View (spheres, helix red, strand yellow):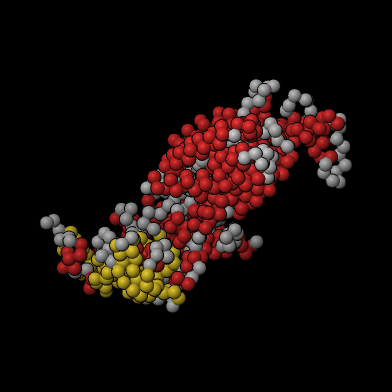
Length: 255
Length: 355
């Protein structure tokens, strides 16, 4: 269980997130949606303490402020929107860096760490690519490598900032299905992602939280949140929403 | 092993390429050969075999007897050996410091010389020498050099990150050039103001290793050993820092503290090296990048191999410096710049892909 209590994130004078309170169930997939500047990324950054916030964030009952940084990294893994991928590292070396929170400051990886990295490579189907340099990967392969690094962290909470923004439609679906399959592993994985594509958000996440100017304006299942009136009110977009047995589809309509 | 092999078939071999045995041995051999060449070359001919025997005669239990007479022995142990050992210490230090700055600032062009650290150390040392109370051989010189070097690295970093909004590689180097110019100007002023100690300062600045003694080795050695040890311990964390501040922090690394430790260690070592050898440029660029090209871009390899190969490189550069125009000596900084500047140009052209 992740609990946010009156969380406020400010950059200078302007708050990006205003007194936000919410709770995310374990093993659920929550998508944070909303127009640009709504505060989606700021919430993810607060959850891994990359940004100062007021209020309280608890994971499994523990205030994350009281955690050591390494301990927090064993609890929360982050996949940033534009990850740094040093071109000359091999996929295996890169994924192995995900074990950093388990290592003493100056120690090297143990057999257990190598095994955990190997499991992550297997789960993301990167076996064949493990000796390839990151610079030689395609966009979809690179995104899988970044996910594998986060999975190697073996944290129960996975934060994804726009996990598919650099991918074409088919690869977006592949990556999102892969993330969905990761949730059904032996250890329950809670996924919190920000997403621009409302249709894909509704297809994969169980719960959508719509943010506007740092506050929650709608919260519920995709069918509850993605109504034409809500989307047009907060995105300023003209859309048609189709809701059928395959899910909710948000389609832009020319004005 | 048999139980493990079944697992090994289902799981890929996941390992970070550190230093392979062959590269480790290769770098060590390069250093040893460089040291022997450094000991052998000079106006008085002393054969390689005699040098090896003389060196081994100091080792216990081997019972090797040196065949050198007392003059040769004095030339070897009081003139050449301290010079060669000091060159190896300074070279190793400048190279490992370069690799550490490159990792800590995530900038392939970072180098003790280009960041202004060497100039800052030079200014600090000049003030200490010009003050008169301290001779060029005082233990106070490295401390003053460290103070100057610290001021320089902080100035460069602050100026570089405020000028380059996106912390571009060029902004940091331009900031380093600015700081270097300023430090050098102040240094010249201090020199001219203290004309009585001017000769001391000039001797030291052109320095190189022509005046090297065992005393210099004793002054610089401890700093080099401690600083290198700290940097080698951080080699894996340098790989993590390479992912950027946010990702390193989300992997549990205290980024600010780690960067501060690395930069402080590199600066202490650089200051000690500069205080015994004067300003020698480009070693911190050439050696780490050569390791990257030949071995691996992982700091696990770059940091320790830079130390060893940097030692060999500067010993050989010093051999060139004292032989090319023999009997007069070329400043060693001229030799390193001759090779370093073209190398820098290549790194500059490819640095976009090396980030």
